[in-house]
Length: 468
Image 1 (cartoon, rainbow, N blue to C red):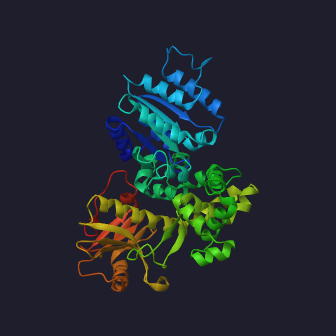
Image 2 (cartoon, rainbow, N blue to C red):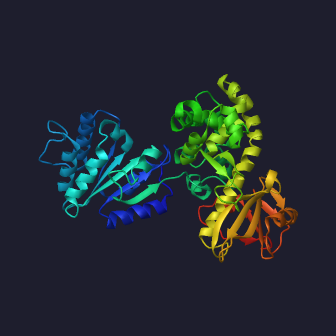
Image 3 (cartoon, rainbow, N blue to C red):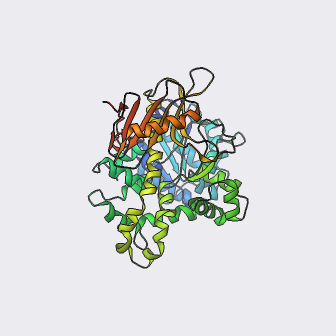
């Protein structure tokens, strides 16, 4: 699979490689592309890339020894045969000696698996660093999928606290990043694929860009054992964990129980810790009006992973037919039934695009937040509000609406936005934004127009007024 994206992460890794003597840490969900990132980064470098397997300590060390022998041949020691490493202290000291003259990377992937057989490994690494600081060019990179375990290594009570000069959490691709995985598709097709597959590189790579949307849907989701269905089930059974409670929470949210009390009633248990864990994994997110603090009670929960939202939403209505082998008969109906799901995903993509523009400074000065907004009871809902903070007070500077329609009338949508923004408290300088799949018509010089071609473009497209 061709490596795409992750430019910022690669730049940070290169800076660490060139200047920092201490450890680095990379973590993120399974399938998010950690191994691909490290493999790409290590190109041209002397690197020992070892993946923990959860084996007994002696077996892990034998496997590591064989890997070192393969990367650094002609050693005096028969690591691959009769004389493998006996413990981690010996392994680290030997690698440090080999790296005195030549910069070398030791990348320990799936680090939590190594902790199963050697729980003291973080302390061993700290002691190793204390012994060798300033005397070796060995770099140590720890990587893993157990998000809580990897994040916990940085805790002040842990042995490696303060030893990480780089800590990177990998997230699924945003809309513009996913475009790099789908170069042969037009922007509307990219939007549809992102809505179904989400931003996981592996899931995006499954899409056959030479076949139609319905053909892909049939092969990837509408047959027994189809890859995307298996991937979604894998996430539910392994990533979420928690003895089935997390899966129940996700099902409840997908079926419309989006408030805390509704979720608690649906699952019959206190969901607080489960909700926190699911948010850590970015499988779930809580949504609040953009103008309110994180402590507000005005919030609801939503599925944060597009693949899961598709699997637990539109696809779930056809699960029985798919298992009975009727995928070819129902795939057209499924494609038609996804319009609401596409609309939800397009709103998310629209907000992500506005954040990207804000970071680039293209939405004005001192933009601090982008998000949805609504009044009590869900009234006057606005898809996207951009807040700026020129002094001490945050003020709305742009409001926007995204419609999963081929063409929209910008003036009609703007009129509705003006009425809603009156409740928001928008000032005279408020700007407007309207997004549609392919065309935004009948606008003015106060309104920005966006289409899927802007949102799902690899290179940043500056905002344009409807009159341009």
